Amino acid sequence: MNPYIERVLNETRAKNPNEPEFLQTVEEVLTSLEPVINAHPEYEKVSLLERMVEPERIIQFRVVWEDDNHNWQVNKGYRVQYNAALGPYKGGIRFDPSVNLSIIKFLGFEQTFKDALTGLPIGGGKGGSDFDPRGKSEAEVMRFCQAFTSELYRHIGQDIDCPAGDLGCGSREITYMYGQYRRLVGAAEFGALSGKFVSSGGSLGRSEATGYGAVYYLEEVLKHDGLDIKGKKLAIAGFGNVAWGIMKKATELGAKVTYFSGPDGYIHDPDGVCTPEKLDFIVEMRAKDSAHCAPYAEKFGCEFVPNQKCWGVKDVDVYMPSATQNDVNLEWAKKIADSGVKYYIEVANMPTTNDALQFLKEQKHMVVAPSKAVNAGGVSVSELEMAQNAERVYWTAEEVDAKLHDIMKNIYHSSVAAAERYGLGYDLVAGANIVGFQRVADAMMVQGVF
Image (spheres, rainbow, N blue to C red):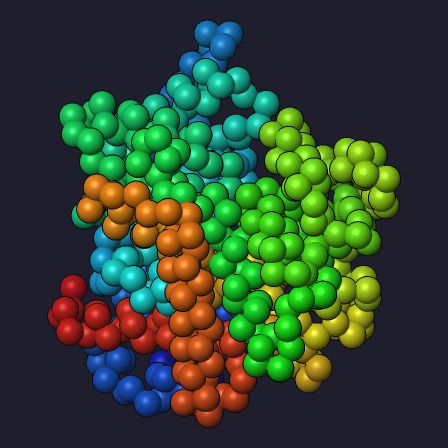
């Protein structure tokens, strides 16, 4: 390993001993950059890596809100403004009990390179709270979002930091946050938050953008091998917005999702989630109860396997982990490799542990694509929303989709070119890390040391 990379990794581990998710993603990114760092000894002279792994700003605050029983509840809120070398901080807000500083830092670090990959003028950031919106009334969600924004508004703005939605924080939550932001700043600053309802300045196509983008990326991977996406069977995880977007776009292009999962187990539908009735039912099911996918099997008479994951099934062409981080560990990775399935396309943020990812990359029969490239569709359409807000226009769904398609194709081809340029062959993981890193590094180098 390059001595500079090794030293920065050791220093980062020493400074952040209780942040495993953050350390995992830093290690994954930096170890893939060795040929770049070897070619640029000037980076060490200006402590580029040390500055890049350290967030520019971390904001932590309490969120006090009143529940429907008139009891006061207290949650933790976070915003990590990671790197703004390329533009205003941009990244989602996550509402989930699992949220802690380590998770927000890892997401912000990943977001920096993901945003750079899009080629759009945005930096990287991430935020969230340990608030759980599940089981809360509409009024409770609104009051929490207003309380959260009453602190966050001081640190964001369309030219400073532009949060979007993420896990547990969809258009409803973002629009509540925007309403409170508008009230506090006294201005209709649409671009301050993205992922809003269309009636409040949101973009058409935003909720399904991550899933659509993942399928567009997969389409390019298959084309590289001379294959068509038509007829391909996909196994995915989750049934939220991202998974639904994959289901819908795959169906439009002639493929089908035959496996998907929830916290309670997984569904096997040999016919695929590929009819309007099934797609509509997915939306209804998650709105009623996002913790259970079993009702789908009851409705459509297909197989439900409780308390299991579908990783390792053999009757598919592509695996797309699309639910949450560290969903696939080394044990599951071995089952995936044994299945003989060639394509492993990460969609969720860091869905694979580092040892599992390295193991899958070492399998000569497999093609592995990284989440920071594959799931960039969401943030791309968020930035397109900001562009529409700035111009005071609305683009059609077809216009947004066409721009998204072009962005995802460019991400794929730039990653392929970068890996080849540094003699790494067809390595989509390293290629994506290199493209994102190089764009941020170039901007940091010309802006001076600070």
